[in-house]
Length: 258
Picture 1 (cartoon, helix red, strand yellow):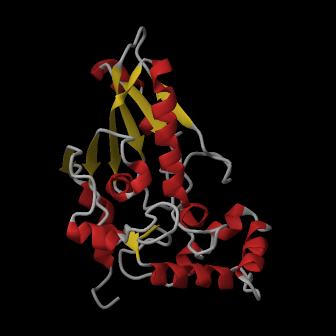
Picture 2 (tube, rainbow, N blue to C red):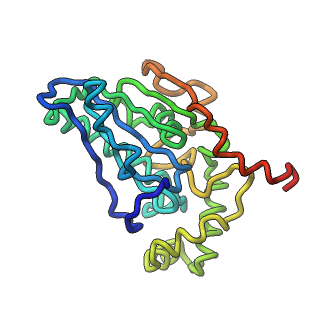
């Protein structure tokens, strides 16, 4: 139910906008969908923003970003630098700044709201230098960047990425040759192997990496979370969704040792 009935492809950088009739200078709410950074889509009927736009008299923007290995594979290479999905989000937020006034929105009054991975992404944007000034407020629903599943070290991210390359029979002499091999594969073949990269309990395959050259730049997200090196002038609402733990009830079938 969390994936749209559409083909898997990297050409997915679209966004949806709902705006009340005769809107002018309204607050903008930008939704970041969740899904563990490996599934999700703004095309789901669940994320249709028309009711929120009408009832709250706001402009609702629903963005897409690459997930799974397409958005978060990490090879420390200019072609696969890690955090590509975060750069997708950042580009969408810049687009909102540049264009939302044409839809009746106020670019100076942008609220990010997201659930699970979407909520953790908001914290990442509080740290990322390139995201500063792109939003005014944040609403975090059931997720934060300091969750075990939401942030990876470069070393562990590289280990999982190399394992995926091995599973896809794309281990080559150079990183660029391996990338070229993977690009020749159908997307669904790549996705079919992501759960075999050697995961720990409650770990997702490919997530935000704490250090990279393009998104966090010279910052280490783990250090930033501990030392407070992030935007502190952004008001936040932080909470959880009702009965959300029911989605993890299948873990009751396993013992701690398993």
